[in-house]
Length: 301
Image (cartoon, rainbow, N blue to C red; front, side, top):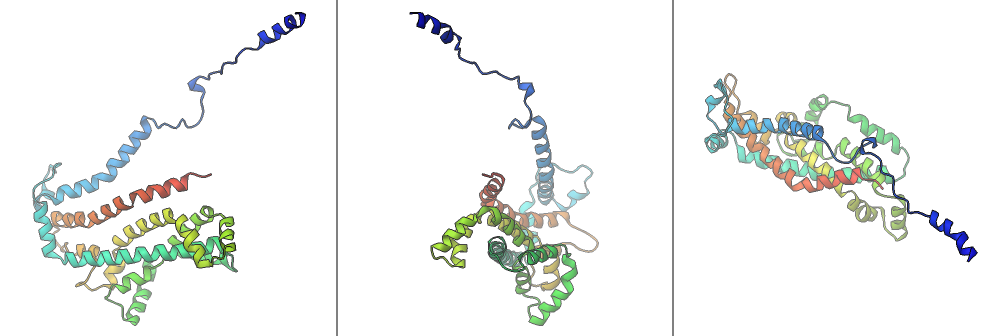
């Protein structure tokens, strides 16, 4: 009985501890929920980015005299399809559209394949001069494109490719940025132990690339393909130099809508709207892969 009496105070002292709540104002760092300022900035950037597209659509749907009005319209007009018909009648639109699709698709496919191969070699294969070659590839990104137009045109003319789509596709089949992009992604995306395990199972280098590297590089390859397609689709200088006026790409053909003394902005912007629609379609198709690549690159561990 005395033993129980001596243990009672010890049992009475054991009280459940309640967690100490800190005031919400004392929290430091990011709370995980954006505030009004963040949403306001995002809305402002969204409106600023979308307004040129909206204004192009507004002008393209009105008569040519709309650009001379003192009070510009803010609502679409009823002449969009009439202006589109004028664009098709003025330039070889369908041929230029087909050329742009062929050039952009071929360049995108080749850049993704060759850049992934080169990025895998620089990231996971050990050979002499690897760092020096990678530095040389990065250094070529500092050379302006305009500096190589004349020598490149001389080479294309010597090959007999001047005036054909091969002169636009072949020089752009691989890019320094694509190699650098895929190399930086594959360095952390593929553990060295996984490659060693594949080699122990009897895989050659190509099989390691196809079965190990290609699935892991899919998000980065999707982003690279989207960026390459957009850049090739909007390229103007080199196709203007090397292609014939009878077989241009879409961006070069749209340049023919402008005259020397008078510019019909309804006609020009109608062509710009038509040239932008394929980019929207490609972005919608590749949007999920783009978001997946961003999230996979942002989340570590």
